[in-house]
Image (tube, rainbow, N blue to C red; front, side, top):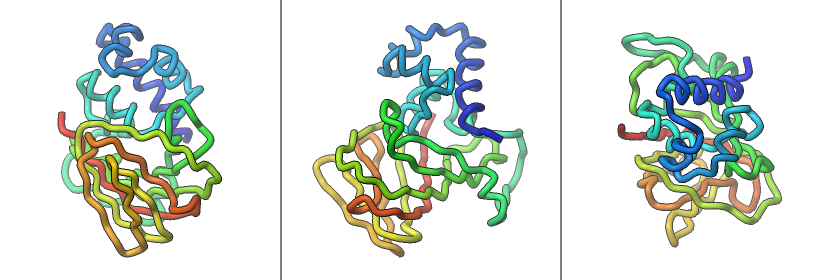
Amino acid sequence: MDHTKIVGEKIKALRETKEISIAELAERTGLAEEQINRIENNVDIPSLAPLIKIARALGVRLGTFLDDQDEMGAVVCRKQETVDNTISFSNNAMDARTHMHYQSLAKSKSDRHMEPFIVDIEATNDTQYTLSSHEGEEFIYVMEGVIEICHGKKNHIIKAGDTIYYDSIVPHHVHGYEGQAAKILAVVYTPI
């Protein structure tokens, strides 16, 4: 199942149901109309930041784009199931060169405020990063490797076994330290 395609289709369907034009959505989110078009038509794979801005502008939770079904109560995600829930986002919506593979851990939990993911960060030669910001908070636990987080004017080096918790409204970027691969558990909280 291609989850990235579903994300684009869900955004388009929600926008049309709410009778919001692409121009209006662009104004509400601060994203370019072309960028929204490309996301809806699955040309661009959005990163979390624009996805969160689109969700807020449409008055839905981020999870709405990732949900498979509505289910009440506790949700258990077994290790073998996480592989089937992998979604690839580019780090920067206008630059699909660098990828992070997100394994969603709570897709069946409806009406949730937190989005837990296991994220595989691919090795890259890119050294230029575009910081992004959105409402909410993020908690990261490094499972393997070393990551670097640019948060505001500070750079944090986080090693395996270490954690970081920060406000997402401060411009930030997460990537492997010195371009190396890493694996993290990331929990994103977005108020609505």
